[in-house]
Length: 239
Image (cartoon, rainbow, N blue to C red; front, side, top):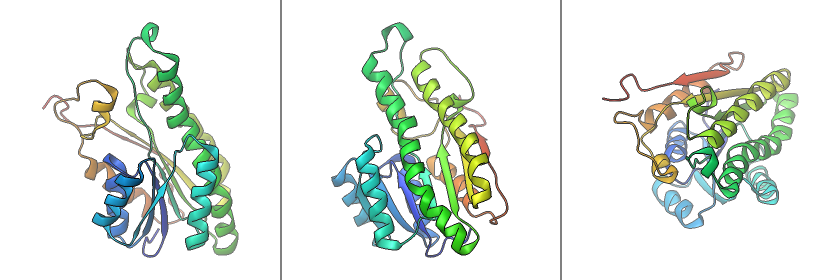
């Protein structure tokens, strides 16, 4: 996809990977609608990235918030070419010490949010396919934890395994509508993710700008070229 003048929606856009996705999409000429809960952080990001970044305050767990956010995008630009479902979080700990609240917030953000945003984007993408012969591209940011279970991250594992299954099912469902679905499984990334999770990061993680570059490579593939899954790891995680 040639990204000049295309419209992209990035969830979890206010920091970490979401910021890097937004920067690189704008560098390639796209208009980016960045979704996050923090209005102030989004506004500051608009100051940094310029007029091609459009802040949209949205909690991806909230059905009404998501519907309003995607209506805002379509009303403003009339289309959605790219959706990057990036919003996510983790709270690690032994299964017998994990609170119901910690379980719920991970499932609601990491799984329900992906579903709500995908559901909101698909009708517009289907119409684009009917009009233009290609609908768009949805990229779901999962994790190595969507492929491998490990101790003390059972809730996070469950959420990312769900993203994997959702991605494979929707990829098969939507491909005949001219809509690509890709799922990305990064290992440790140098963002604030581990601070939020309350655990130490590996010594030599992936860099977020490199992960973003890989995702942009997927999106820029020719329309009939679908890469449905990508696994990324640091070569030497311990340095």
